[in-house]
Structures are given as C-alpha cells and as structure tokens.
Image 1 (tube, rainbow, N blue to C red):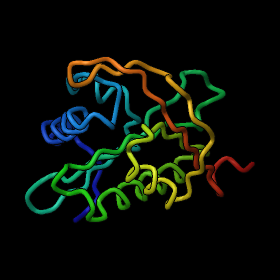
Image 2: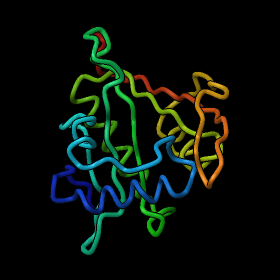
Image 3: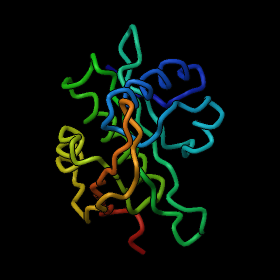
Length: 167
C-alpha cells in the first residue's frame, strides 16, 4: 500500500468509496455523492490523499476548511473513507497519519472531526492518533437513511498540533 496525493484521475474510485460510506449510514449526513468538481472544490488541494495498492484505491482522506474567515485559516475538518473490502488493514491509520503530517507542514494547528457515535472504528482511530473528545452535539441534524428520517448525534474530536501555530 502507498499513500499518494489525490488526483483528478482518482475521481471515479474516490467517489465510489464515498458512496459506500453514504450507503453504510454511519459516515455522513450526505444523501448523494456530488460530482467531482463540487467535491474537489470543497477540499484543500494540498491536503488530500488516497491509499492505493497495485490494483485499486483502498481509501481516501482530505481536509476541508471549517470557515472562509481568515481567523480560522489554521483550522480544518477531516474526512476519511475506507473501501469496505480494505477496512481493518491499517489503511485508515496510514491515511490519517498522512493528513496529520501534511497539516503540520502546512501550518494547520487544529484538526476537527465530526463522527456519528455509532462509527466506533473511526472514533477509535482518531483517538489513537491524538484526537480528543471536545463534545457531543445531540440531535444536531436529520439523517434521511433507509427510507426514514432520524435525528443524529455527532461526536466532535479535535487534534491540536504540537508544532504548527505555536508562534
């Protein structure tokens, strides 16, 4: 497995993995995958990666700005999605590690992650790589999934850099 920058030619597999996350019901409030232009525009170009083996993309991770306001330019939100067939093989740890390294080189001092509490594997992964619980937003959004609409909680985690933003 290797971690490489996410490029436009990865779009079909990246978006298919995102669709798997949507279909699983515990990864996002989104109901549909956007087209590549919309997807790409929402991610920081220098902070997005794919994990691949010789045959396929195994997963992807990217940072998104949390706000357009200049005062929050060192704060980013983590997205990480692993193909169902690649889960439990260290792909998530490798991708999240690459994002952390990239963010620190890029001067990002705070990484945020919003995770459904049912997504215990993602919570454990983030905590293992230095994220800490900052709170739970109860019933923060309605999730339309499986023909029903339910209120969902989101667990918020944060990782503060020990090197970036320390001036």
